[in-house]
Image 1 (cartoon, rainbow, N blue to C red):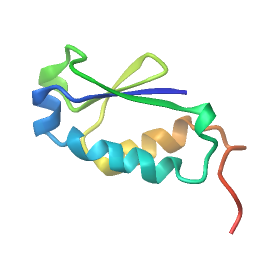
Image 2 (image 1 turned 30 degrees about the vertical axis):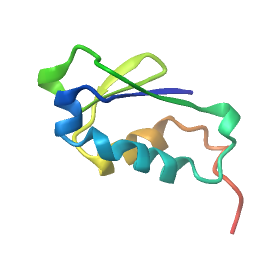
Image 3 (image 1 turned 90 degrees about the horizontal axis):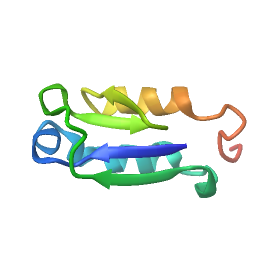
Length: 84
């Protein structure tokens, strides 16, 4: 899975600056080889930000909770991390 977080000024000001922490939390305990995470400058969707792309598909993400739900919906069920 490829995750791109827009860190352009508009998305950052609307909350994307906190998205890397949410991604780290959701991916904790998962195989890091299965996911590539990058920050990028602009997705050209400034009026609709914050913006995240997952596997090339654009998503408007309003906050950390929405990002968490989006990531969990895209992660494979069999890569849920280690059991407690």
